[in-house]
Image (tube, rainbow, N blue to C red; front, top):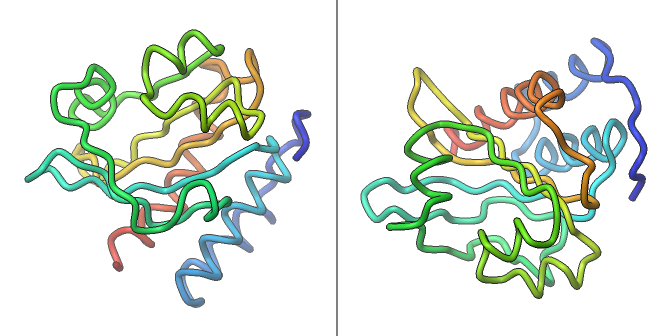
Length: 164
C-alpha cells in the first residue's frame, strides 16, 4: 500500500488491456487493482456500476470485500456527488478528511482503512456515465494533475462494466 508514485508505462497498460480483452472479469479487475497499486498505491479501490433508473451505484469490484463487499449498493439521488460525478461526468477529489466527511455517509469506515483522500473517476461512454472507479489514499495525494493517468485506469475498467 504505497503512497509514492511510479510512472505508468505502455507495457503496463498493454498487459492489463490484454487481460481485460481475454481474461475473466475477476482476473481483469485484479490486474487493474494491481496496476493502480503499482503506479499510485491505494488504501481501497472500488468499481461501481451506475444505475440511472434508480440513481444508485452497485459495487462490482472491491480491493477489500470485508469492508466493501461486491454487490453492495448506495443511493446517490439528490446528492451533490451524484449530480457532479454520475450526472455531470466530472472527476471528484476528496483532498482530506473534511472533504470525505462532507461527501460520504460511511466516512468512519473509510477512515478506518487509513484512507483520508480519494479520487472518484467517472467511467464515461459517449458522454454517458456507466460507473465510477474510486481510489482512496492519504490526504493530499490526489490533484488535477492525476486526471490523465486516472482516465487511463478508467478506460481499462469500462469494458468490464459493459460486459456485466
